[in-house]
Image (cartoon, rainbow over all chains, first blue to last red; front, side, top):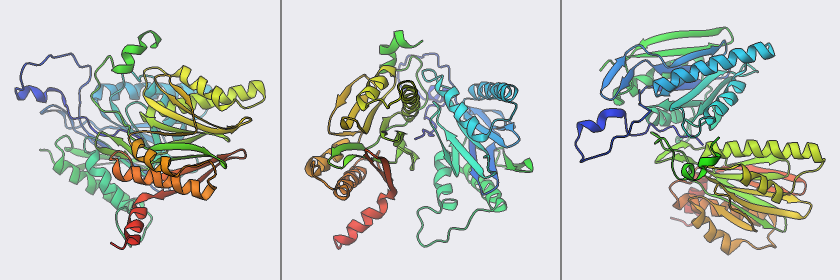
Length: 237
Length: 224
């Protein structure tokens, strides 16, 4: 049970339309846009994000990727409020180091996911406004994707889209990777090349229809050989 | 640290949230001669978006105790973890499992500022027990409960079909039907149905069933 919808109040947009007298409270949150996507295969995982950082009608940066490498087998994608994304990744990095020093081994993807859930819930009454998706390899070398809501509810999936264009991408992934809502179709297992191509196509579509998604796409492919990155240009308008 | 401010927090957040939480569900449980039956849908919605069509709303707490969840999923997940931990500690310290009523008491004491209803179903030494626990502290013992936005629809099926003397197959069929009807009419319930059966030997789980198929089967039966 996850809440992955981007809430419809992105910062200063209301000021452009006069709706009557309204009380302005300071909001500690701001919405910086961006879309993140993760796919798990048989022996690989892909985490991809666009690189646009926006606020209201402005773009702060065209080169701000939302995938962060955590370990050699795990990458996290965070979208939502950029300030909370940065702090959260710093906290996760610190906790990974602490674990490594105490237990003399690297945290597994499943352990990182469980830890992130408790970190997020620790702020239940002043949440991190971040939509997280973790992609990586589990202890058996199979691809794993863990998707979260802002207060820490999580589960393991095969594929998940998060962020501003998630509502557009998720049905497309359900159809193309999950073979849902189709009759009489052969379920072919997803190869790495097909998955990468699908991710690129899906982001190109997202950039067409979502204003907060665009500029460039960063794809991180996680296999037992390591993490390889690719950057693909997207629409800049 | 939040205890002193529980009332303010229960009604609203001190900081206005920019996103909605996910909730909306149909869960039900009832006692009958064969033990306890619990059923739930699997849709996790978030104000209009189906955030997850395959969530697990009935989670086993231990071999003989099963809990259903409704409300904010993160809160429910936390409850279950705390409850499982406390029950396991009790079991290790006292050498026997805590009764359902005790587990219910423990659960309600831990809540504050969260939202959700939980039903706990298990057979204990005194027979099967069913408790409804709510985040405002309500703790009710009963023989039939349904929680969630789809509960009115489920109640109509359950009130008509649940009797003490049901066989396991009949009880499963009633529970499934109740979730199916609720899923059909309630926008925030749907996708699949999970059914768990708890007896003195432990819980067993029926394979998750997609309700879309059931809808078309019924259409076929009616010859439309």
